[in-house]
Picture 1 (cartoon, one colour):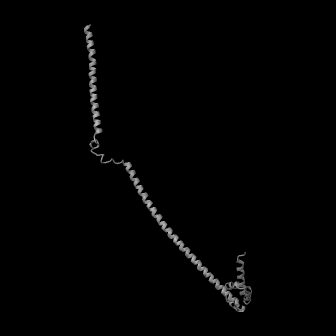
Picture 2 (picture 1 turned 120 degrees about the vertical axis):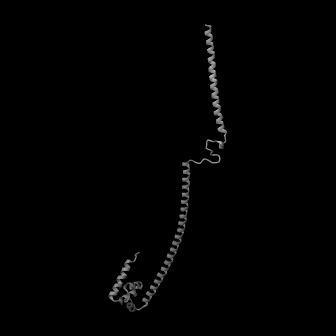
Picture 3 (picture 1 turned 60 degrees about the vertical axis):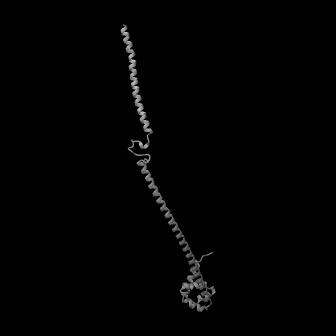
Length: 203
């Protein structure tokens, strides 16, 4: 019975020792791996950017990373659009300048036309006044003639032309001239004078 008790006590003492050795071995292995991992991480964090071998020898400090392709295309499109807008603005400015010049030329032409029209009106007014003066002088001449002489002259005139002078003469002198005309001539002149009086504005 005593031998059996001693064997149990010996095996009970050995098992904890063996478990402790396994645990210590595991801790040592775990500690070694952790140390190596931490050392590797610290080395990568503290190493200069140019010394890193993971980028295939590319020096990021002196050669900046280019933008992605989609952003580069967008930037190029924006530059192209800006150039187009600048060209369009320049064309619009040129057109506006051309329109301003054309507007000034048109204004000058309008002013010249207005001046020519005013000059023409003045010339026509002078011509009308001169014609009026001539008609008034002729009327005075016919009024100063003897009735039979004036009648012989008016008989040779066109009825429209004769009616114009007779309408300006004093009524008594015009009647004396009309009495010396042939009846058909006097009638034609009378019809023309009546038509002019009918078309004259009434107050």
